Image 1: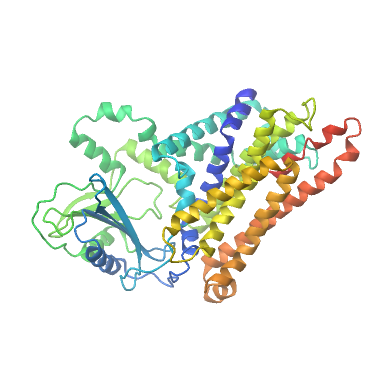
Image 2: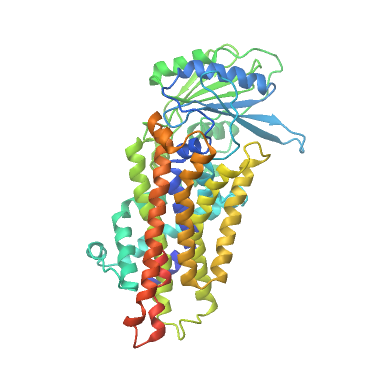
Length: 524
């Protein structure tokens, strides 16, 4: 079990660290998206959702005339604009693409803001890894989650005194210190780590285990019923060919609010608008619901007549919905998201300390610690780039959001390119520099980038920290302060690495080369 825990944790540990860290940030992806679109004004109070839906539906109908499908995400306490996407025909072998835009809730007009994926980039990267084909990325994420589940269970079995070790921490003891830290982080968040790993697998269970569905649901009607229990998006059917204006979307949203309460509507989806066969689905928001099972009301788009109410699913689908909601935490308030963030951050540190401990433990056993074998050097360099380098890349992504010209074509893609280019450079730096120096330099660079990010925001936008404090803009204030807190954290770790480096000599006279054993570990 010890070997199983060690090697499963190592072989996909770098992927798991990236998944944990980007997933942790994703609990505040909506707030981060607001920060990355400073042109969109803060909503001091939420407008009438029904009126907003009608205004934006009219505007989308004008912009995307002839579309077979559109969807609106209405504003809420965490989103200050209406996000819409619609299907548009393309000439690329008959395939259809999607267009998207943000709309002002007050006027319904399309707003001009910088092109960026915002916090959604970290959310998607968390389980798709961006440049990979989507299915490959999700399969890799599933494999990593399964490995994580195995490593957690094997770790519990391996550490017989795991709860005793939770209360033991020996500072400055090299390998023992990293083991203590790893144990403490593991035990404190053990229920969360088990939950988040297992529920991560459940979110994509239909992809990983499709055979049961294929065997049980063989007819199109059965598959349509299955889809209705898993998703509120109505698939476009064949249009009738008869033109008909879309009925009042405002009335449809008001009917939904009468059933669920004011402010409870999250999305409005329409298929075949301006056709006699149009249908509209008004979907309930995820906020306040400890389930991701879809709840929506379906209307006839041409007449506005209520067709069906989908507010219940089967026991299996509801179980899946609850587990899905536990993973995403969209049901929670700000305090709940902060709790998720902190425990998930500890999970990130748990994976990082485990990776570093592998090198710390084995360096002492090398015949010549100054000239380790290739496998050891590979793990050591990947640790540096995956831990410190990822912090640099994520900070550089935010710097790119502020420095790239607002009107630049393909700007959102270039921000992501900045992330990957900087991350690749961090790996190159880790390969070319001595390991101890690379840890210190990369940690200091991450600290500097994070520290000056609020100052860069003040120079490039009209929403500096002092303005946000006066205006009561908690999103901008919170992100600026978080950048400084993370900068301080990286600086403290960098200082600890440097001090450890300077103090190892006097304690290792019996074996002068063994004194470097703890150095890479200090960078975790």
